[in-house]
Length: 221
Length: 412
Image (tube, rainbow over all chains, first blue to last red; front, side, top):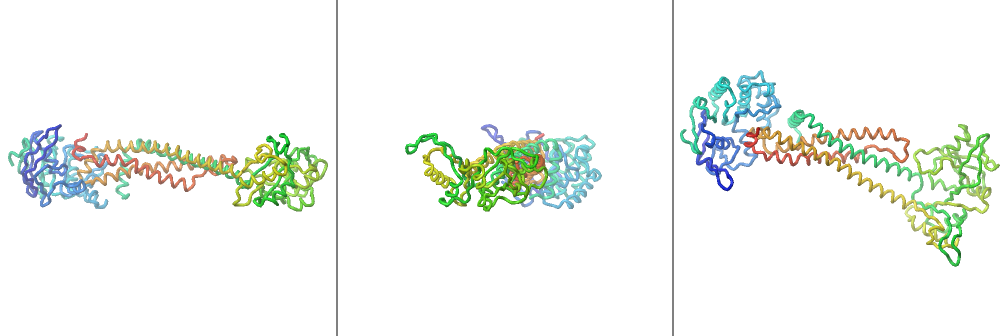
């Protein structure tokens, strides 16, 4: 489970400071599927970066299970990202010159898993998201929905403590969006913790709980 | 350091930009090509010159009699100094630094020299038997002049290849007699043609005869125009040369400081100067070659910077997926090393190909010998390449490791 206690974050803007997060308190239980909603400028992206161990925060405490995520070295942060978090991005962020299979296997590469085992596992996860037959294709040969499935398989492969999805349906048509949401629900049923950042109400409503952020504070959860 | 996966990553990255990588690599290949070519061509010239110098004893001083230009003990200027072969025998007895000494004096009035119906004009050169310790003549057939020839005033000669060709037309000259000024001279030896030498000053058409015979038949006063003294190992040619000059100055009454009474040429010093010249040229060639290479290295560094910039997003993704900074750094540096090393080897191969071509074309060019790539040059080139690759990759790699994943992911 994930716990954020009074997280504050500000950015310097010229001589002033822009206070983006003004004390975030939130918890996500193990196996929960929640969405974080907020308008642009609400602090949603900053919160995502902190959750994803992509950015530091000024004060407060952030726990993933019992591990305090604070002031980490780059190396440690990279290790935690690799083991704790599976990212799904709006723009998929697949490596264009690698096949679907290689993209999915990449997190295991950084764990030092051997190539054979990596590929076997990657194929297994591609099967779970339903596009095993596209394993050898490059991202450019796949549709948006298929690309996002590859991204989800990649996020799952390291068996992270949570999936962090940033506007996962933002680039998709409504049919593909629904397919992806159905896939998330399926994964959720298998016990994976999922946090979806979105500004689309109908997407958020498909999760168990909506956390709304406004002006750097959580207004409901 | 180089795992199989890393190779694959590098291969894929290079494959994605074939032309660009090729052009970058070409800069390095060209640099190494020029460096190796310059060094080896320089070496070829050095080998050639060394070969020339190796054809005769190096710790040697040559002397020519001249005429005085400084008044000495009431004697006028303009007296010509005429040396004799007997002076040389005395010199050797008096000055212990001398190992070998021999005149090399041409008979000026030898006229046409003939064998049967064939004849020609040749240099007829009077020498001591130990002349062969001064100029390393290769005796192809027969023998060289010996002390008995000297003692007994024998009318024997050793002829050169060209003389043999023109007078004997392929017949075996050994034991035959040639006619010089109406007298028969027996040919006892034939000097094999030495193609490695250019500084032979017409030695190719020389006929050698013993000094004693020369004195008896052509030059009753025994005058010689030129002689060479080889000093013993470890003796300083310069000071031994001074001793010889002083000895001769005393005998012929001229000022030892008179440069023109007796011309002195110190071969040892000359070789030292040539040696220094070539090491100077060698350093210069290194500098030019390395400068060319620097251009290539900067090119690789530049292209790696572009690559890193282009792959900002990819590096961001990798970092988000758990790539530690050191894995990004080593990937970039290794890619740079691979590009420089592979293309550098290409340049090295091309250079050795071109050099062996040059070598075979210039085989007969005596002042240019064996311009091959030696282990020394190849080894330095490889070390330079790897260092260059690491250097070229260093700044781009540092930039890459500083990329923040948040910004990289936002980067389109």
